[in-house]
Image (cartoon, rainbow, N blue to C red; front, side):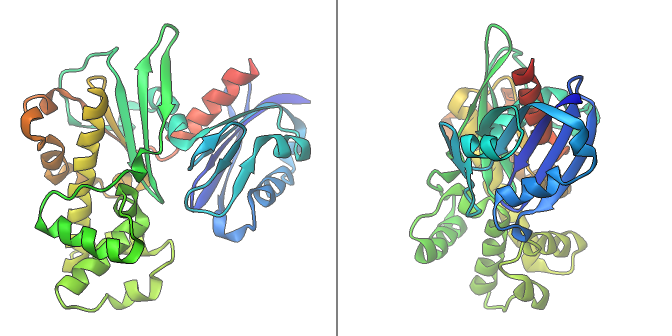
Length: 329
């Protein structure tokens, strides 16, 4: 049999599974919608049922999970699945198993991203061995740090997306109050996520005394609602959708700046995640960077930090492949 490795990116709405040879060549890659499966084991069973997969013996597998990892177990923050590496090893021929946070995998995938998939929002003054910070809004809000080590980058995955939201103006204070009444705690992830964009849209509609768009109202609660709001905003068909995305981007830029300050990310602040990649015009137009730079006493420091948008949405899968290959060798 041919030896290979498996890379799995487990998000709140989708699961990407990729089989590669030991030289890193991709053999097969599948995308599964999480809502169509009762648990993660069912996803793996579907993948292992593929004819091509049976020709390979796995030396290692990396599961990059959108949620906290404790030892050999992990839970997905926005999906009721539990991942138990040891139990999965007994059920499937996975080889050595690496279990990590999904943004740890994103961090390891950064240096493999093609230059065409990197957009510089601010050149800054790069210090190549200084810390890097990564942030990305999608189904949830991922964050990670990278520190230069003796043999490469040391990566720290975090659950920093769930820290308390800090409003910056009266409108954001009103948004905090609106969400606090519903949930009792307002984190950045509650806002900087797909469901957060929908919540901002509903908040602004209520503030302005308007009803939700018919299309959005029909899709509230589904994974299609954030994409629809983005489409309505970019097409100019819905002014509330445009205002919602603008507010989202301002808060996104502010939290990206918070993250960059936390480690003085002179090695770069990288923006990953599907929402920024799909709405790059909004990210590039200025309000993101205005919020990023607006840091009071640290305002003179912020322009020194390189800020890069990653448009390759498979960067996490690439990082998971790297970790699987490293474990196999």
